[in-house]
Amino acid sequence: MPSLTEVLPPARPPTILCVDDEAGALTIRKTLLERAGYVVLTAMNAADALQIFKSSKKVDLVVSDHLLPGTIGSKMASQMKSAKPAIPVLLISGLEDLPSEIGHADKFLGKTAGPEKLLLAIAELLRYRRFQIDDGIYFAEIACDTLNRPMVWHYLVQRIGSARIISWSQAPTEDAAIIAAKEELSSLNEHLRHPGRS
Image (cartoon, rainbow, N blue to C red; front, side):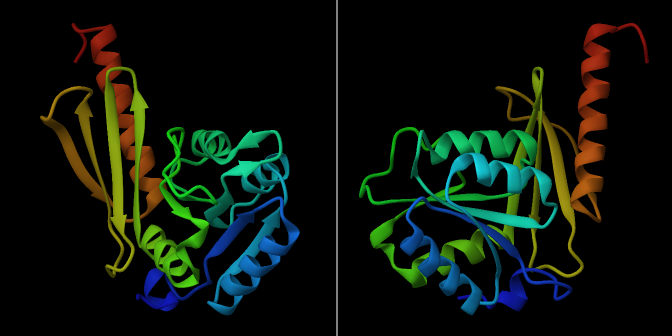
């Protein structure tokens, strides 16, 4: 299993937002993650979790129970992804089978998976950062293996439904890759609206 220092740069430990409406389960999970070297923020419902998630720039990953008061984890994950698409969301459920409505979550674990599988899933999600930005008929996929030093963020742009890569490049940071990919998407969409302009 990768050690914590291999997963993110040594400047700071990763911050995990942990969400569960059962205080006992939340305390156990928080203790486990802190002993593994993570900084842990907690919330007992989706509303509080969303407030922390949107206001904090530090959250690197979300671990949430799937069944929450008044909602389900996948709906919360969808709202989180619309605000910050690069942050991975791991859902945990007492259900043995994968829920059909997992939606925007990056990974699903059953509660019977145990602490080792949870820690491994978290390490993998923190290592491989990959997400997609949709814009009209085009999309950009952004990816990074955070174990590589120096970290390089790759992005490629494609038309939805086509395997042909329109453009590909790389950037030194996640923000730079997002900005460059959005500029490329904007340029492609502008060309569609005004094909005579170069």
